[in-house]
Image 1 (cartoon, helix red, strand yellow):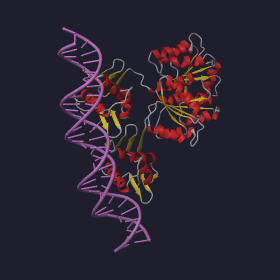
Image 2 (cartoon, chains in turn yellow, green, cyan, orange):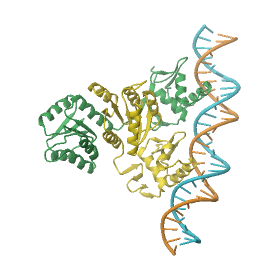
Image 3 (cartoon, each protein chain N blue to C red):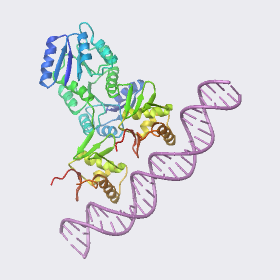
Image 4 (tube, rainbow over the protein chains, first blue to last red):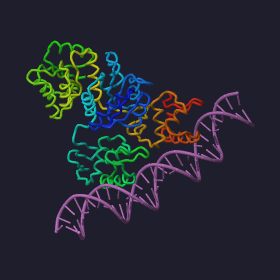
Length: 223
Length: 223
DNA sequence: GTGCTGCCTTAAGGCCTTATTAATACCACC
DNA sequence: GGTGGTATTAATAAGGCCTTAAGGCAGCAC
């Protein structure tokens, strides 16, 4: 899980990330509201932990702006402010959970997972047009025909499908298909090409589309 | 909103439903775990409020069974048990929120709404007249036809749309489309021209308007 | 071990899209 | 008629992406 921690108390931020890293999550940090907002705009996170009292911009404002921009990343507000009005304001501006400091780490983690779980597809099968992915079996069909996929090809297709019809950046796809190592861009291109040969080539129209400079997406293009 | 209240304390259940009805929600009731489970299986609810200590079947068991059956209705656990272990167990069996009694009604309502909001498809699109932007997909249509945009063109249109119908200054648009570098004014004009060719030219009337000396705006001009 | 197969990786050339530059035309206003 | 701001166009430069081919490395059967 990919977490953004927006928190001005460096000690607390470090303590959280220590714990979260142990649980297998990855953490990024922002130490004031403005940088938090910018980071959230630029990168994609699974969850955001947001403090309320922050230098430069309050947590409420950060959340409000993100939501206005159509960013619906789950946000957990973590703060020492425990008044009802603060909590109500929080939910009004679009946060998803409100936790009062101090909070035991395991509980925080449980709530983060709950938020993330809701955001995940809850089926083990997903169709985009005539392409169907069977996640548990690591296989896919199009128009009923089995598609022959290499492990890497599957990984790429998997993420594209989960996000469909959204655009997924090349870096994200690379991280997903090669979690433990960096990968040469040329290599990625080749794998992508193989994938297209399997998924798109044999059929009438492509489902994998390139958005130059931004990434790739998987969907049926009408017209 | 359609709520199932599973709660053995009839007074509390009544108090909740009174409040929730006032907020425009509809409530159904179950007074023990077993009937709660059956109701949840038979009808579709937007959210379930689930007590932990219930006759016949504990709340955890109800949740567990529902999840196993592929029912992912958001569940808010409302209980007097405030121990960490209870909370952790709750999240482990698949609840989405855990609230300790007594809880002020407005807060409960806010959390219910937050859960429900997450469950709704998040459109993330914006229309100005017949022009529609799909932010996550980085694409736009006008009168249903796909508009072909370059990355820079998209950036410019994106900001114009977010601010529409307000006027956006040229400098702001430049900063948004070229975040890392300054840009020649001539270049900006060219990009803008390309954008207009794609967005306005093929259609009856333009949506991008110049305000000499101030900036640009995106809107339908009446008259 | 040898040779096979399938997959990953590396490298290189070419192509197409997009960005930039520069030169020219427009238009309102003074 | 000159000026400042904007529009248009074409030509060039740059960058990103596609494609192909060939080498390497594992696992497996013999």
